Length: 231
Length: 274
View 1 (cartoon, each protein chain N blue to C red):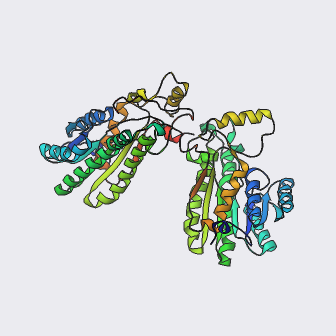
View 2: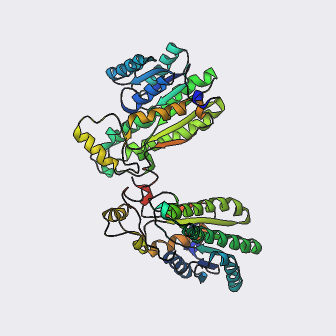
View 3: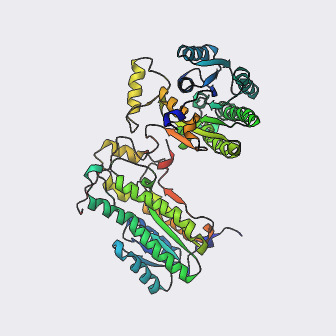
């Protein structure tokens, strides 16, 4: 079979984008729409509401073939200063939301019986550490392994799941204190010497939802300008 | 069994390549201190003689065999020398290598064949020769054995001096395959991946200052020291690691765990909602 643009054409498919209010979520929703999908955009629900929200949305649009989810709640604090409430909230916002979204989407996709695609947006801090990011990095590490574990579990149902791990993106500027010389050096660290942009995220989400990647599952793809690959 | 007892290497024989200086010398001395009988190999006789003398002075047993590890016949001879001296080989530490040849000032697209091949010969083919020669004897004897390769943290990231990390990446991969192939023969293979580790005490104040400054790039705020490879090597050579094979052991002061920014970079954020 030849490779052509049809592999990226999402016409006739329903995509639910959770956390469409985040820059990455918005970029993915826009890209899915441009690729022809019928897109339902939802802001990040509270963790307890995620399952019901996803199921209602799937019913409203008449089925669900693609779920993309991009919640992002950053916290940078010295480990001893993090309160139990903060730790819980960061874990719920970054990990539990993704987990419940997958749970609901998988149930819907299984009932439909013709497979599906899940794309979770995460962060390269899920693979590496930095000071002050203990809870955030650990929550994203949990998302990385959620992807690997679910890939095994849902492959028999024809559902694939992959991750997009963001590096330093331009909308994360408030995480970098520009007055700090070390922070400015952090931005010079990627091989591609700039912060990531929304338009860096949409295309890979489309690729991951297209028909050319049926043999790709359980993977996490950094979109980080080479940040994690240089010495 | 007492856990410290499992680390003893009494009655074991070990070959260490690149044992004339730096990390190889430190590992050879550590294995000898744990009770192993050593064959120390390197290209420079004066250096391995010194290692052997230091092992003797500490009450250990060792001999020096001049070896160029880029020549498979010499590597075979090295392992034969261990058999001749001690009757067997239990441990092969394929440590010899070096990044110097990788540092020519060429653009990538002008990098010469010979330079690349030299680096591969010193840093990858040498490990294959050592692993193969040791495996041949270990399999024939049927009593198992341990292979320890030494790679480099540079193999796990991109680097302008690409030939050396490329070869060392091959060593990591070689180790996994060797572990898989030789597992049924009770031969374990693991790879040590040093980060920035000093090869010895700084020779002068300028070197000490450079090391100090370089150390600030690393989470533990210092470079590694040569002798710190010794305990890891003993662990991997001993029964303390008897179920460990095919694995990579990074010893880098945390350098590779971070790397999303300079060491001094600490994300800051005031999050008022919580």
